[in-house]
Length: 625
Image (spheres, rainbow, N blue to C red):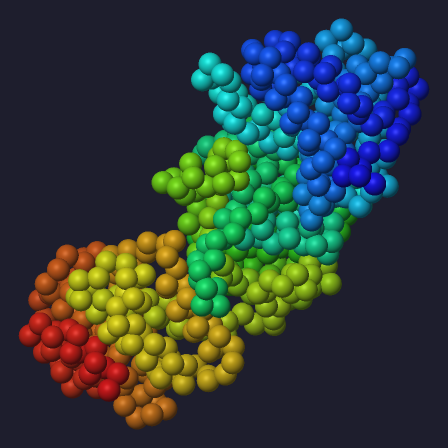
């Protein structure tokens, strides 16, 4: 068929047919009417020349422009065209956009709705999944037509309509799902405590991708864990938002965005406690995930069962679990993502304590133990959140103002003790998810390679006059020092295998992320305890295995001592004062870092002397020689 792609359609009152040449003159008359041109942003037709140009352009577009994904019907009643309806788009994509218009004298008779319904029925036989519809935010009649025909509201694009007088207007965007599989309303299967940036760029992103790939059929209900703030942004955007993934991936700079639709709704238990408890009455709820910060999993004995809700997160969770137990339904799989050791065990302990404090009975205690699985987890992804300085440009890229806009790096890791891949096929979807019996080795790798690399590098880089992590890896000397530590010191004692090398490579890419300005002064906070946990274990293991202390660890420690003596570090006052007022030998033997490090004295002293003489770069070269 010609590129109009239009076949004749009949309804009870109308005939939808191809547009004839004389119809274009009718178009021209309609578009001169103020009530039509206002909403259509029609071209100016003040002169005969402009009117002829208007007609010729539409004749060309309809009959001659080669667009396979273009349809347009004249809406004919009793042999006279009274309006039109059409579709256009990119033939390589799975969707088209619908447009329509009705002559003023024939409006409010249901003709547009009848014509659109016929077009929708026809398009179900074509190879498209979605139709998009848009309307001026002030055009309430068009808004109702789209809703009545089954279009779902998606978002509002602000200030995208430009009027001749310089004013701007908003446009509403709708979607119609042509395939039954796409129209199916997804179940609510996941309860999420926490609405912050991290989860929206982590678990919510994963669930969204599972749904889009047809590997899962479930949505998330957010529960607000604290009384601070509100959920108005989620309500205004129907819980839809955009995520930008930006950074280095396989040596290439990447920046990609996606619209995330994994969240069905958000519940504030401080405003609607009954709606919160009602989540327990949905038998399809299976998973509970949480990210309530490190201070979230705490036991507060002032919380009571009668509170609406309990103030602490474990208290609210116990209230929800008790309601679930009373329904007789199965328990949950709980995946807490707070950054504390054994987070699943810690959360379970709090719940059991509340159950005993509130005297909820042995039956409930047994149900907690036997019908619920509290998984220890480890999460890793740098989420930079709402990009305030770039928001305007990024919103222009996606086409509307997104108050929930989120940004993150490409790298991600979710390590989970247990295996529920058969229910949440995250690995099948391509995510870096580790189902395991013990996350301890994975945490050890993260601490020693990622966190250890930060700490071993931070003071040598600061003393080189460098401000950020990104600048550090661009510096030839610091970069060589860092790579030597990762591949010649840390990996040999951690285990020289493919997974550890891949992780080290990812660390280098993450440090080089051009979209993240990670200040070294932030990494330097509380470095005495950080060195003891992140670097020293590698140094001690290296000494035990190879007989000498690694010089990178010695230089890093010497740089720390020099910085604490001569700059203004931010750490515990006792540790800071001790380093300022004692010599190197006393510092190393004082158990300040959790061990007597007197054996490191020769290496640390040699490195310190180079730093003190202003030769920090000489020290970097010495450390890798």
